[in-house]
Image (cartoon, rainbow, N blue to C red; front, side, top):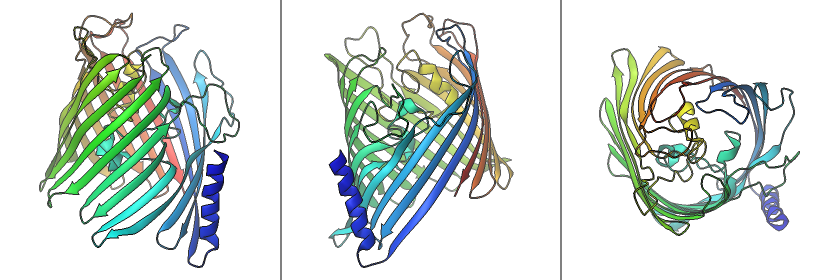
Amino acid sequence: MKSKLFLIFALIFVASTAHGEFRFNLDFYQRTRYEVLESLFLDANGYSRRHYVRFKTSLGARATYGANLFARLKLTNENRTYIYRTHGSAAYNIDEVVIDNFYIGYQNIRISPNTKLDIKIGRFNLPASEYGEGFLIAEGTPLDGSRTFYFNAAKARFRQNNSSLDIIAVTNTRTDYLPVFNRRANKYLNFGRENALIVYARTQHNKRIHAQYYYIYKTEEVTNRLLPLSSRLHTLGFFVRTDFNDMALRLQAAGQFGNYGSNIRRGFGAYGFADFFNKWIFSKITTGMVYLSGDNPNSQSVTGWNPLFSRYPWKSNLICHLFLDEGGIGYWSNIKMYTINANINILRNLNMLLGYSFVYANELAIGSNFSNGKHRGNVAQCKFNWHINNRINVIFDIEHMRRGNFYANRRDAFYARLEGVFRI
């Protein structure tokens, strides 16, 4: 590991001292978030509510040499101060400082007259906006919340006209293998080691149609009471967006096959949404459906959907927590959801989102927290996003869930956050 770090630093040093134009930039990110969660489930002490403040701070540096060689290092810390909970400290402490991003890359390598290659190796994010709206690729470190999202990976991107092809090798570990300042015990990032090979293609078929096609092979060496067996899984899928004058259609679907322990595994996931722009007082109206297969107890195969690298608040912070006793928080699976959202631009830089979702399970679940129905509940959301300027952003978000007959308890669920972000 030390030899790899030395090699990367040596390359950065060579780039900075060689003849040519060298540039060095610093960036800073501060997020302060107050969160309230009223869960459907009780903790070990019989409580369901927690209030806490999260302070996330990042300091980054980017070095570039000429137009093609670049490197980046970013350090991140997040502390949580609990205001109401049965355990957790109410005092501010620095907690861990981790290496959030650490990579080097080279771009615009000419392969042929019409093909160029970009390469990147190290620790970096794979943005949801580049990979099918985050349906399967967005979050490489799900167990630390939104502190980090990185993947330990090597990526090659081939570009040609309006098309590109990414080939990515990923290896994510249960705990951080790079140096950590003020390391805490049992600070897990994943349930176990995860390795993956991702082949991801994008193309602009014409002015209106953008498509993405992908193959993902992932292995999971899991040590989790909810998912105790290792997994080998192949995923094939596509994403298509079609744009019209005042609307857009988005469709994504993927099939999964492989094994879970000694069991055969099959899964299917899909969603379809229609976006309507500038209708009445709304800047955008979105309506559609999500389907992620559940594990059928009457099948000899494991049929539950595996969200791969998308265990994060994909469609809802509140719904994300509903999977606590299924595959874990953010393990989007066994769900059928019908939703409608409406955006209103109250001011030029102040947007309000109103949303409502009917949420169901495809299969019954086993456990004391579950009942004999398939209606998870109905979720209402109101979210304000105030983009004050390029450096300051404020979000206020409220979600409420009316419990359905899928769950055994009679409590409703509630989530709220007030968040301020400052960046330089």
